[in-house]
Image (tube, rainbow, N blue to C red):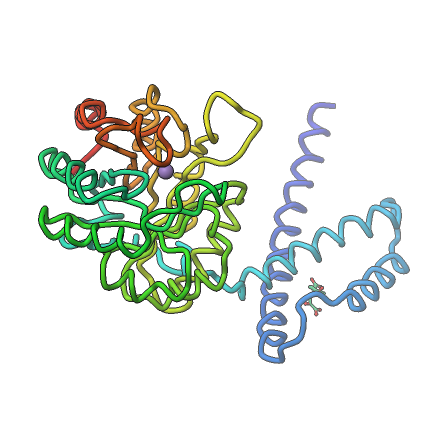
Length: 357
Ligand code: PRE
Ligand code: MN
């Protein structure tokens, strides 16, 4: 009895090998057909041909498999075959790691982003005054930080809230950056302001609310300086990556992505920090990926563990908001660190062993 079973299984093994060989032989022919279809510009999927094959196969089917089973099995084969043809000719996004396996490394006046080292970006939510900015810049310089953020154009939830100093703010950024030898990042909200950005700042930030402002993305794609693209408040990673593609396809390959939290039902944080976005974006794209720990949490008390989590997940940088006197800040007062708090966070990050300069 046991012997008979072994023998039958042996027979099946032989048939499995034969089926495997035949399936792959079929797959090779399918690929050749795919090549021809690609050249002719006709769709890979051919439902008429599939139906004709199914009709013929069920017509000659001797059983014991019922026609429905045969239909089901062959439909699976056709589906796998179609996948193979489509995979062969799939158009990869420019930002995709399949298109470019090596990571994009952006050089901001000697500070590399996207390589083996990490970067800290810090600064006030908004540029409020020359003195405010200068105080932060001096503290950053003292701490050895090279990249400063500061918003000049502020897209606020309410039109009655502080809208930023505009061009005056950009000019202050330039003046203070020149004095302290810092690199600056600031948000641009209008396609016509790209040249202004090139004149006064080093990196154009596209804010979360503008992640799918396609005319703005196209304009940033024509700019001559790098772009920091924030994830939209309810954007999927697919949408985020496609937004980056809008910039890169226009010719600007220096794009950094930044996870800044997404909107969920959670109320204990301002947004929900999506840590899984970091390894996924690193895997799917070749662009540097940073994490904004201030806007994702909206709090000051969990910044170190969130920064550690981001770095452990593979982030190329951390962004945090710092203000000389957060209580009087004209925007995001609740989440900005004062300078001693920032210094404490910074030493915690340096001591984590996860940040390499
Ligand atoms: C094939 C694959 C996909 C099409 O939808 C139809 C048939 C198949 O696997 O048989 C091959 C093929 O591309 C074709 O015959 O045109
Ligand atoms: Mn802010």
